[in-house]
Image 1 (tube, rainbow, N blue to C red):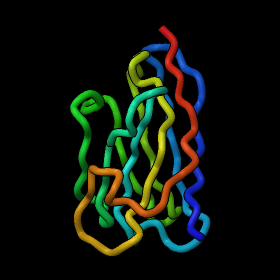
Image 2: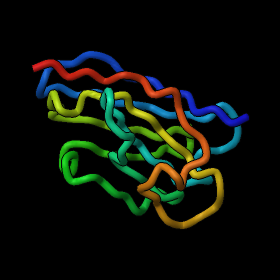
Image 3: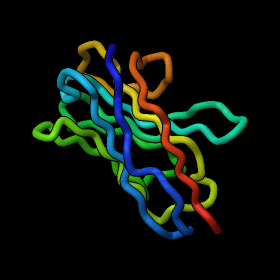
Image 4: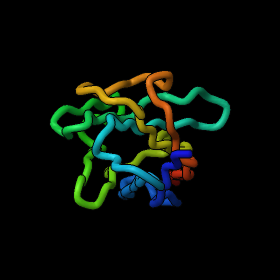
Length: 126
């Protein structure tokens, strides 16, 4: 069973920064497209950012474009979400997800992904 292990969540003041990391328990993450999603309490899980398997194509939802950066380090078998200039409305559980099948594209819907991380909480205080 594939597991994605996330780290880096926590509490930060508005305007601050956090970096989330995602690493699979087995196999090579760089083989597959990866997405970061977030889910505020009582709301749906929505895409934040996505990256294709090569790392040369990315997607950002409008509300984080210019503040968040998704990247991957094949040598360390990791995917990151660097979050800058955080706002209270960024507060949510953040999930990394892996497609689990080969493709050259990135994906923005929850249905495209086969494996998920545990969703650490990110809380931004005003």
